[in-house]
Length: 464
Ligand code: G3I
Image (cartoon, rainbow, N blue to C red):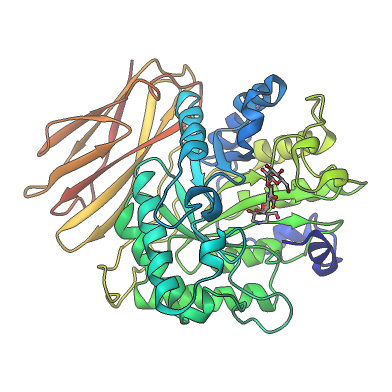
């Protein structure tokens, strides 16, 4: 994406108190005093992430900040199509695997980016069209999502498929020319390959209610009504010198469709307003109970694709900028997530995959010590996938167990990021070696798949 386009389309109304005006939910005020981005976000049931460039993982200053401040990572380039399938049918996961290992060793969740995008396609795909491209792209989604199955919190299944400007229409691309249903076909393939990952549509210039965001909104509403498996929408938020006054209202209207929203590539032009804009975006996310996390597109100014814009939260030396403090304060002042109203699931089965039901995750605040667990279910007739979030209390954990009592007839068939003991009745899940040790308020996730129904299960967490 072209940075000049971002600035040209940036709306000129400053965001500060106006953001609060669009708030429609009752949210509990839970002031806190976390001292890192990840701790403060986790206290409010959210993640705080950064895009990671693989080659920077050998830079000590970079890695120190990454591990101290961020509990989510996304590959800036390493999971894109040109990186993962440079020749048709030859898959390369070196960079993606390295990032996943780093994340697992450091208690970070992973966003996957980006299975399909009109840019960064390998040359062989750029030269394809029609049904050959359609089957190549579905194979790509299937292979890559299968490789990373169980390790990805949320996947950007489709990136930047809408046009800029006032049309509200799809962007022309070789992918679009395979047929208008290419996006839903990709979501069905991703769901089948990794049923535990949240599946997102991700785009830019969607920072408020405008023609482009409305085009996307209409697509998501249509997908939800027809049972296409979409769980979340990413708002990249590459921002200039102002923030739309309806930035929060835009997030909220998507959340009201029954999907999570995430700020996925946040960076802001430097200058007098930078700290205020970063804070405004953070407040907007905190005020929307389905806004589950914020990712900045890089760590330090000198790591950013925006070069001299100095668009991030840390100086190259590693020093925290004023924008860092404004984000931390906004996280600490923000409300915690409260359960959103039950969202009706999709009503009509899709063509190839049973419609998922995605009740909003409930994320209780950490207790005084010990740990808490909450579950989010994707269910269909005869089966389910459960994603469980474990949150450490104020003393942190050395290890944890989560017990779940399944209804009669239900059985666990597959578990990731935990070890299951038993498969029916009361099943006990124990941490694996990389995710047992959690700092105060830190969050980790595991998942399991099963047959039967897990409706209404309540997980119980015990720390050791
Ligand atoms: O690694 C090669 C290097 O070997 C080669 O010498 C050099 C020559 O150009 O290129 C290097 O690759 C570059 C890569 O970044 C790593 O630095 C690519 O050319 C360059 O195109 C690529 O740019 C990335 C861009 O997406 C295109 O994929 C940026 O790092 C990345 O920040 C940017 O991220 C995108 C998101 O994926 C989607 N949303 C917009 C965002 C910003 O444009």
